[in-house]
Image (cartoon, rainbow, N blue to C red; front, side, top):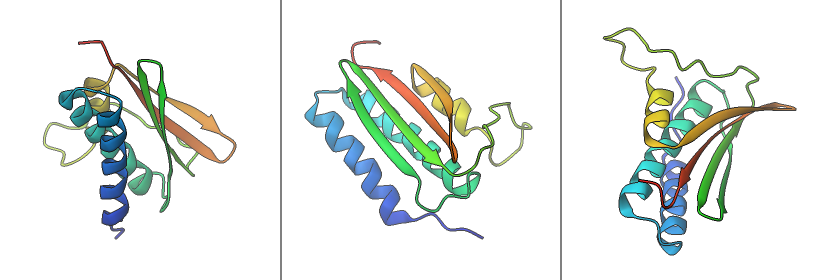
Length: 121
């Protein structure tokens, strides 16, 4: 059984939070971004088999883009899990919290990303 790297998880979320606060983002958007980042990190660890995924946080004008790259070439499958399943809703959550998300194939694995727009409701 793999265990999440709790210090890395907490530090990554804190780094995102700090950057968004410094850039003037609303607390609700910051919370949504932290939650979406957490889902992508867990997926990279659990499904991508990557103990140290590469995380990129970019501010492109009024757009925040966060990407998490792992070593698995398999694209995520965001289909709804069975009603009583204990997991499998992470990408649905990311889709609901963000304005856009997607997957970019890489030479070794993939990058899963999401975007939030600062002024969008």
